[in-house]
Image (cartoon, rainbow, N blue to C red):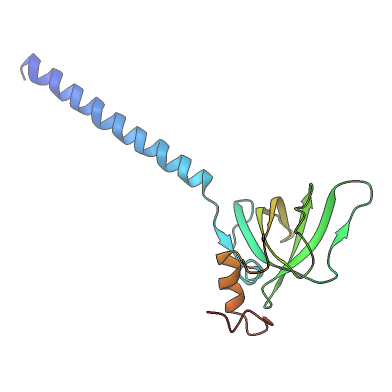
Length: 150
């Protein structure tokens, strides 16, 4: 093989290797930053991965909010009217957070199947429901006023 061809072959191989490495880095970054939505029913069935960052949403169960008097720790349950999931959150809750309201929480599921939230988002007016939560509530036959909405 003449030296010029050998040099071109090495250059092409480096380019292919560099592109493969760049694609690998992009895929790893996307995989680490993805957070999928799971309903309380899916979490209760074990479909949600433990330890991975996910989003969970539903209605805050009436009478389930328990606040620690010495810290910002709050325990509550969310439901899609099929199953309930216990949630722990250490931080300041949004002003619109209330029992019976729809929320979406971002966090991780621990070994005890408790959702440890890093961020809690509440709906911003009475007509809005996060699309994922609305879809999960539509599937429930027990949802009081969401099963008839389109």
